Image (cartoon, rainbow, N blue to C red; front, top):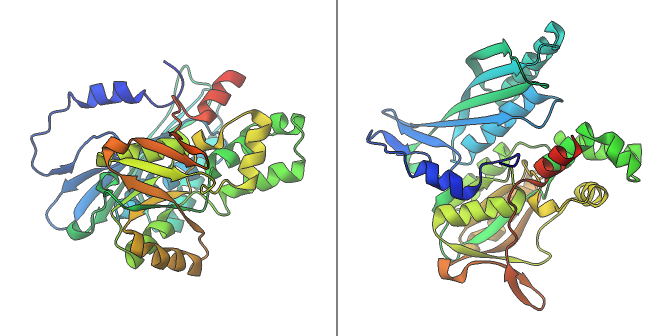
Length: 336
């Protein structure tokens, strides 16, 4: 198989074998849903696991952020984090301590407690790999799912794309970008997207839940915006239409993708949040976002499944593109 997520068809086949009989499982493994949700008595427990495999810089910080994002997309609050760190034999004790310092710094910034995990020097790997598990809580009447989108909902995207993929490429492949004609200043600016606007969507999700009647939220990660949209549609059993020119592509992303021959629509895009909600609620949501310094953009509409997945262009409609794997994975595997 190619580097990246399992193919959607394979994942569906595997998940079809899962047979959950425990009535306390509110949400189990489903295509498009990034968290498990469990009934524990009072509030609901939200659980998420995700690895960091492409980056080598600030991987501890990445791991906390990306796992916290998915908990926030349920309307929940991330509370407890567990980390498993696998490092190659060449790794030093100082490097190992630095990764754990990154984890602790990220946890403190989100008021999350590091409560456990595992660490080891692992045979046969050439870079550190970290796997995180985030636990959080959400009130039963405030749970939001990716699959909650409704026919006629407006689709809003925050910040723009593709923050994480652009920053990661600037940090991991600066020589290729220099060779392609970017200046060091431009590369540094692209790398800084990791911090500003950053890859956290906790504030985006909080503002959305407080200001509007949110039907679904989804963190745009591996596979980029297009894959995120497909996951919302799949989980909700709906179609959608995205308006040409409505998707905000950050200028740093445009330049990095131009130099490396990548499509920004399929590039890892953590930091951007997809929200679906009733159209009348959109102005209030965008105003609330703007008041806290977050850009928001209405990019399309959820539709009946029979309408399919469309890009609405000036001269008609075309099928929404599809990426078999993330553009980052495609580039990194080809450049090894």
